Image (cartoon, rainbow, N blue to C red):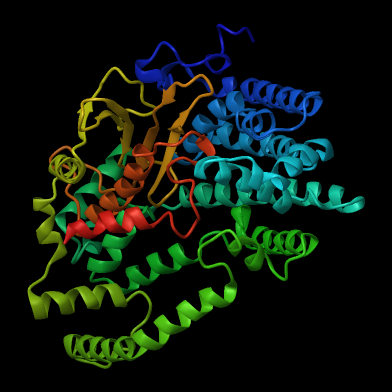
Length: 513
């Protein structure tokens, strides 16, 4: 494929702010671009190793930081779309390229001559006069090599390489199985089955059925907003049980059975951890977290359990009594009952009806409120730009302007469920913030992806309070990425300790109340 044909073979220069040209990218572009990125990355590593000059922070650590530039340009589009806008071709390609990417990664971490250069720089770190950010990059680079098998010898190096590749394949397969099976669930109901359901749920189910060519029926799925509303409001205990068993029983049998996948993932993780000298995979993973050890995690969990158990047991007794009183007979609460009776009890005691709050949270107004909060707190403003290509018609792209009028970044909002999107909510990036060796300050392109109640022909998207909180939470992650001001992409934005990354998002979500 020629350079002019594949948009990944050069910088994105024809779009506003160098945004990804989604309108020109096809699934056939990814594989040759990834192969090219791997080749260029290996050439960059070879150049570092072959440098006749003694290893320095600049010619080894910084050079290695930028070795993956071309590969990352592809993966920072492919990986987010694999979760937000995938199809069978994308998933097949993911399984195909995952071993190549794993082999590429381990070929770098197990490159003995490269490791010797990294170690040489690290060993004289105290005499280099590095600033805080340079010191962090050096330490992270060194630790990454150690945690990726650089200290292994002989056959252990080959074993590590195989285990890493296999783990990448398994985790990719696990995620794909979840999405594939989720899209197989269609629960068809009639008008007689809808007792208790709010108008928004009924109308959405009618629209979903109509889109399938079955007007007059009602189609429910296991998409998160559909499932949560059904479990909270449906008067039909038998149907709540059916939905619960379908939802909690996903991926445990059939073509998309994840049980053997999970078992092999656990075994592979244990082998990797033991190979690297750790007692368990938890000890290995938590070493690079604020918690540090499994013991600290359990200490926190146990303290929470002990503090909350008395209140939980009292609430369960109260809820059970309320359910029995409401039904006029003894009710033994089951998992499919909690949300339903808890909602009824809240309504009876406090006149609190979450559905009644939806008209106050029309999505357009919520966007204005969430953006406006950031303006009040930080002085940043948001301007929709319809010239920026998007990967789906539902997605909206905004320029983010700093308080001094300078360009801060791009944020994409992707709100509604679809078959090509996995469940849940998350923030990611199509481009990281960094300062290039030439001194250019690259600003980030972040995206927040959610699964909110979708508008219909007669109703706008009206959010429940928990959905507004989700928006605020993910937007906190987005601000974390947008406010980044670092020299190195690998240290930028949300590239922090895994259990610290939730701090900005949880801070932001508290503004709901």
